[in-house]
Picture 1 (cartoon, one colour):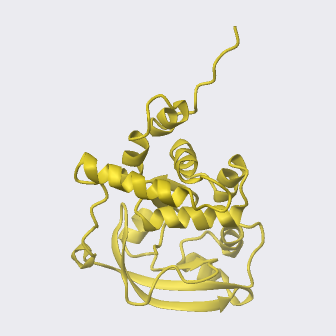
Picture 2 (cartoon, rainbow, N blue to C red):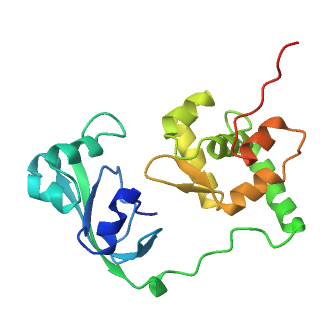
Length: 219
């Protein structure tokens, strides 16, 4: 679970002029009283989490969330699906000490043997997919296209959006990916997994270097 913000809001988050946000979540992504890290800002504690009706929002509500006006807020709330939802979550928070954050879990295996064990587990999980192997292709797409919306990544893999998002969530639970306001990126562990793939695989090499795969030219 997390709370993410675009960098354009970071200065106002740091000075406390933004202390609430509205999110078009199907379910809460944060917990009341929990402390979360916001890269470039610090740490925040969640003060309240309420489900509110969009039609009850006013101009002042939008400006309190850092938006230019109510129309700007509605555009943002509808950007993911193209439709403004009936209800959204209002999240109020305040800055707190980063010392209250839980210590990060190590994300890179300690040695080559640990990495090989992880790869073996991933391959076993990969073989259980209802639609065939998917883990490494998904990691490659995320490495090549960080910050790309899930629907575009799913389309490039000829996958349905919802089942793709469920699979990416499995990778996140294993410390391989990070979710952003739009799209995903790989963790150090995710990159270590890709770098351990055979160099002879051009897609693996291109994904690890965050480049598009090189296509052979016809003679």
